[in-house]
Image (cartoon, rainbow over all chains, first blue to last red; front, side, top):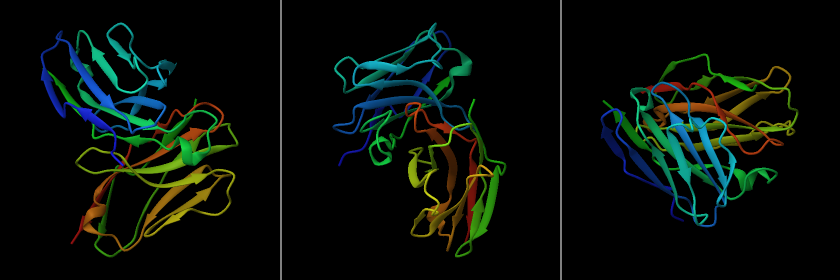
Length: 119
Length: 115
């Protein structure tokens, strides 16, 4: 079974530029998550999708971050414009289901992430 | 708000020895899940072990086991017979069963394995 795919692996940009990250979840997984992991910290959830609908985006800085999952499969996370403090690893995860599901069905599987450096 | 605390920034262990990582959490929920994830330098978070709060029995996965103390809100991970491949960051995570699938992570513990 193929895992969660993310691209690019690395991205270096200057502040005020735009950047986009792509995620392809495990086939059949309805729930997709984007996390931000700042160096030396644990991941923090930015946004959670159930199919193509947003379940939780309470931690997403909506003035500069946006995410979409138009067909309920792939997802894109965008930052526009980037700030120095956005330097982090952006992790995508997916699970078969989300809320209310049995543990076996809502375990999150992670991709390898994109390391973003904003100069 | 739920919080997860890992008080050990770094732990060192000799190959073949045992190391225990600490995790405490704060919640008012009674039904939840707890996880330990491993993050090697490749950055991919790998699920090591999971525990359901209503299960009294501690989870075990090969050389990995947990000590779950619900009343104390403690969830420690024991790695037995440590191997060089166990070197990584380890994150404790919590998710309440009734409130979606939003994982709350601790700050992580780096495990160094000495040959």
